[in-house]
Length: 220
Image 1 (cartoon, rainbow, N blue to C red):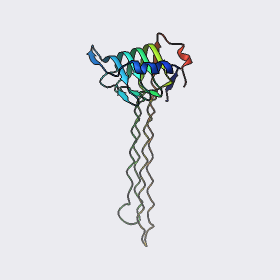
Image 2 (cartoon, rainbow, N blue to C red; image 1 turned 45 degrees about the vertical axis):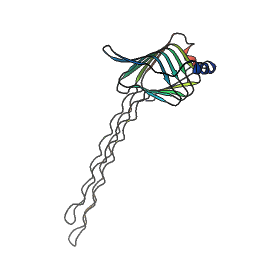
Image 3 (tube, rainbow, N blue to C red; image 1 turned 180 degrees about the vertical axis):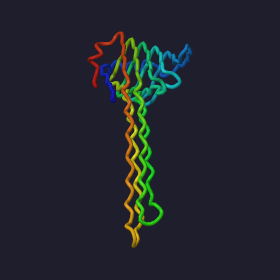
Image 4 (spheres, helix red, strand yellow; image 1 turned 90 degrees about the vertical axis):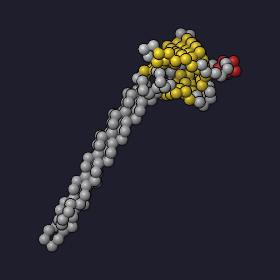
């Protein structure tokens, strides 16, 4: 299942003002209190750069700045991911990616073979193996006091595609005939197998204290 969201506002002038006000630096402090989280004073993701959330499923920052075409990749090892920021400033064409993993394709069944000796039917091919199911998209929880978006923020939480089922193996050929018997029939091909199930889309929870009506920002 597909779950994609676009948020849009018109804060371009403010964003580019902020672009020159905030220095580019990172301050990372990891805490372990029954769960792992990344605690930062400021997280700045530069233009066309990617921030990979790994080793934790929680980011807590005072200020989050995503410059144009930057990306956050969520931690796929966790069902739920959380981003908390007092102020989030988002540039043009930014993306948060938490798509589920695709299933693995099935294997082709073993092919049949020609039986030994004259006038014998070919051996049938074997059934292919099934594709595996995909994983679900990540559930994302966003908590902001203030959110400023220059253009659009794309949030991709689709489930993965199921793996294709394997094709059945080809049937083996019949052996030749003689004066006393007809040649054998070819063996039947094996059955193709079922593909895996697609993953469910992840859920998005968005809370913003000082934002306009979020429904006005929703695209699709």
